[in-house]
Length: 308
Image (cartoon, rainbow, N blue to C red; front, top):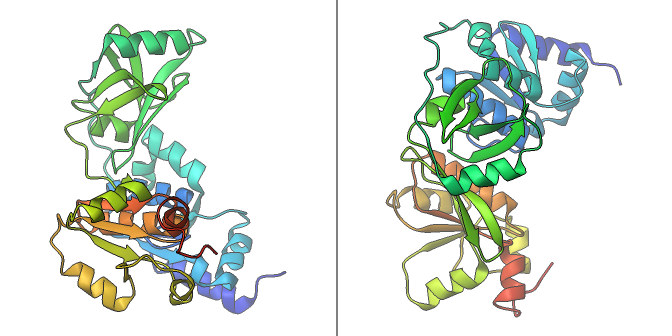
């Protein structure tokens, strides 16, 4: 399928009229795929404003931008009229500090290594898992302070931190967020795992099991339950007392206190997680996602609620 001239002209106009434009799935405030969310988080670190275009709302544009750029995947980033690439390329530029240059921003001072604390239990666990002297522990911290750990070789632009006799590597953005980070290894019912905590941690969407939600409601705890599904789905099955997150529901939610306990649910938990993340970005701090959605509620709590 060839790209029509009107679509080619439309895409070219968008790129020409915006210094930085990201063709993505979803919007800046509510990305609809992990790759789009990753690029948004990196751009957000450096730019207060930039243009995003939701390809999910326009299938012709979604196909057209792929042909326009000769690039098969979404998201796609353009800076000052030039195609930069997709998620992996932007991540590489970000990790090495080249994204700042590409955006035309001042490079700034070299990133100082943060101060982190690592317990002996964690050091022992890392040592037992390490397979090669060429492997180092990499620490990743995204804007919402979700942590990642993996073994790998040194990469250009890595910030080195020594703690507990070990060298840890962080990309520049993670290093800025890591000051005061503590890493421990703890045993639990399902086995051991690393525990990372920081005084810089931002509020996160908490996961809530159906049984825990029932216990909270049975105990009379104050909470607001919002259903993010479509009206058609609500006609098939409902959790009693759940308010529809339609336009009226959104207006009501906006009147709630920022620390109000708010639970979101959908069919299986994906859409409600995205809704919770959206309101987290708007400053709400006590947000929950119902794990497994109404389907899990039907199986675990109330079998009278139809499954579909």
